[in-house]
Amino acid sequence: MAKILLVHGAFHGAWCWDKLLPELVARELDAEAVELPFTSPADDVAEVAGAIDRLARQGEPIIAVGHSFGGSVITAATGGDGGGQAASHLVYLTAVMQDPGEPLDIGEIPGMQAIRFTEEVVSIDPNIATAAFYNRCKPEDAAWATAHLRPMPTATLTTRASSSVAWRSVPSTYVVCTDDQVISPAVQRAMATNAGASVEIDSDHSPFLCCPAELAGLLASIVSSA
Image 1 (cartoon, rainbow, N blue to C red):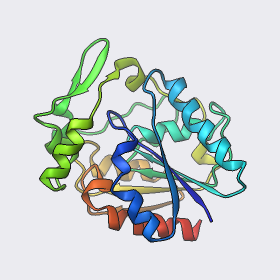
Image 2 (cartoon, rainbow, N blue to C red):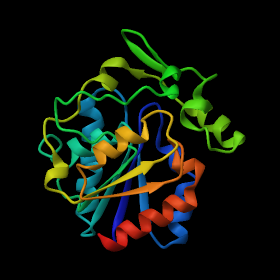
Image 3 (cartoon, rainbow, N blue to C red):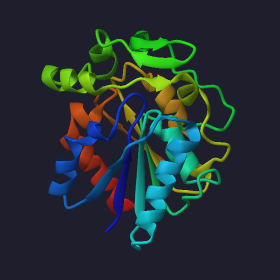
Image 4 (cartoon, helix red, strand yellow):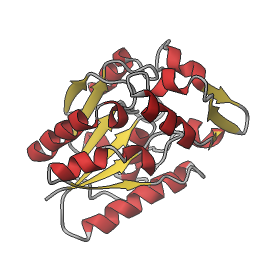
């Protein structure tokens, strides 16, 4: 059976998958979540590459799922930069999926107002976090997630993690979230042209909280076809 490796996005942590993991278990899927350190792009890549290498030694196929910022991390970790080249399929969940050096224009979209940049640190305004990340989530889930968000070094968020393009050689699927307020659906669909396949889900930026059962079913389908 394939192993699903879940890689969270900016400001989040492994906790964000807590509602998805039981749904995957219910579908007899094996999954684990990585905690990115957010200390440097190289450290984030090393964390994921190390997890992929460890799982590869167990002899099972690995499906690496990157959410948002996590897309650039799985690209680097499964390409020449990270050394963890054993993933058999990459899933970009409303995620960054671009050529190295290509500027990321996520579009004019309301959720970006929640991001607070300084020279050293990037953080999320908790008063706008729900509108940005969790606009389709239950209020209690949005409040719980907002309380867990953490700041990041500006350099970690703005420095491109990869000089390689793993998705050119590793099969991939892009998951477009159609009510995303952080990365516009139009931008997602443009990046999805880089993937071998793409699917759409009626969700905000955080389908692991908004619709975990539907996301689990989608991942189950990807695992089955991969």
